[in-house]
Length: 224
Image (cartoon, rainbow, N blue to C red; front, top):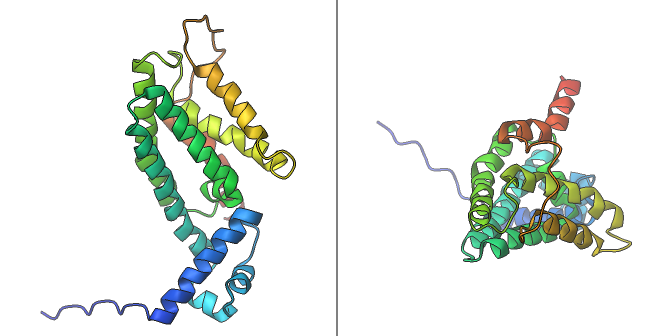
């Protein structure tokens, strides 16, 4: 039997151009969001448009590459939080650091919420990040530092709720989202006080997934 030839390694100049394009995309997405074009990215990277299309078939392919990069970063933050022995500090550190990432990168939330991403990428979030959040919340509840009806899916909606606050105040009052994060954190912390009963239960992970991907499915139907 003949062995299939190994893929040819990328030429050094091609590899350099690819990294320049990724660097440019990170900067432009962070500053302007996902509205920029691959042509914009090529100009910002100082490479020809043809070079950009040889490295990435389209902007969506480049976004997909950055999605994995961002997912790895969020996963690393969650794992570092789990190394923190204090359950309250672990949970708040995770929320604070991921929201700082989201605030500092205008494109991050858009990348995570982009309707062009395939189901495999969305399932990556569920299989790689969600179990870590479940563990962070479990530890906090076991230690009695958060209210007993706080659930892992509440973390997802807390993060999502911050996105429009960040977007509307980013250039006017950059730190104001931290005010609302403080309200959220004070609202879930347990310190032997009486809580107002919640008017609705937390959503299951399945319903949360449906809610967070509804725009994606609606976009896909319109394109079909």
